[in-house]
Image 1 (cartoon, helix red, strand yellow):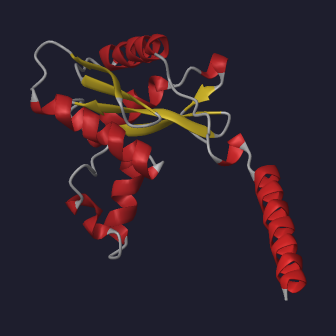
Image 2 (image 1 turned 180 degrees about the horizontal axis):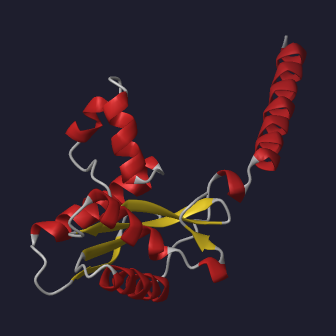
Length: 174
């Protein structure tokens, strides 16, 4: 009886160690930690400068919000004379573009056509107004921009689209 017990004990311990060794070999830091590319403050300043210049060419003053890939605010600016509501609108547009990975003008138009997505605007942080654009690098979303106060959906959208830094591969399309 003791021999059978000893045999079963040895078999279980051997199997348990094999499972532990197998588990250790299956573990990889890549399964637990992912690197995320993000816009930097320097990039946000450059983007802000480009977007402000585009707005000036259209004789518009706007609020601009730039978020990183996680939705954290990097930079918010408001031109002189722009209504205070535009600052929050710009942030929410940027957040909407980031979280949906879609330009907000496209999202707005698609939502209006599709009854299944029409209520997206009822989610607290989403804002289905034009002027929000995701920002991409090497096929990954690295941030977003929101522009408000350009006096038309088309203006906000076209001003926001000037956020690309194409010479570095930072784009507004995937």
